[in-house]
Length: 403
Ligand code: C2O
Ligand code: CU
Ligand code: CU
Image (cartoon, rainbow, N blue to C red; front, top):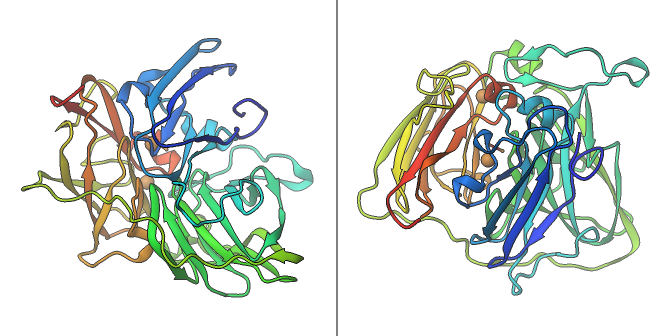
């Protein structure tokens, strides 16, 4: 399954201030939707289950890009079928272009490279084995594909390459590092750039999270971006079943002998983080095995009513024994604390999805848009797609304010 092809979809690019209109025709044999993950736009254009597209029908979304340059993505959001459709390949990137002043590699496909990482189940002889058993966090495949390719190889024609990495897997988390164990630099998180590239030697990316990383590739280098074992905070058995002890090659990167020299930018444009206004409303959400505040999704129930244009403090605690993450539609939030402490650099920029290990609690400052709509909800949910399909999702509406 794919958009405009048999697998994945075209990269969509637009600049801030541009008006976008996208026509989505459903050629599948089942209902689908097209959700613009990370986009700040009216709920009626968001492409959730409330904008379902029947087979053979066309749905049109239109909005104006009014947020920071970032690596967003798009995927279907049908009720209970998201794991199936995304897992079969329905995902694409949506890039909001850099501001002209930004000094980052930005030649798409040359030094600015999208990497859509998915895991698939492949049996002996290349057949897909029947339905794979679900780990506590969902379907885990045994084979990694990147942009639909197994064991990809990229030859760098410059000594510093920007990779826009999307974890488009249903459930697998990747703990990314270089086979050289060398330093790479985090330049951007889900919703925008960091104030300066942050040096890292590993980076955890849970499903739906994105990272813009800068990887130094010396001329003649031969290295591998790979995923290495990581403790997701579950029992040892659940960690193993969830693939967290696997070592997987993601991308072999070699440096061309005549690569051009590119240096790391010292600073990036100041991030547009939300600010606290007055005394923000505080809300608390508790994650269970497949529930939020003890409930499963009901399409006809509004869980949270929020004044349009307000900024709130949301705390999310994972009281279950399973790893989860938490995604909020229609916003890019700031992570103000993880277990009461200042978050690590991977969570210091704008985010729309955050990993929450069992027992952990995160505090978010969430700015809501001005797009009031008393009848069309946005969603918040765990982005491990089996959990999402089980109904680990709630709905909010924005009231009052400008519409
Ligand atoms: Cu990536 Cu509710 O979505
Ligand atoms: Cu989303
Ligand atoms: Cu979950």
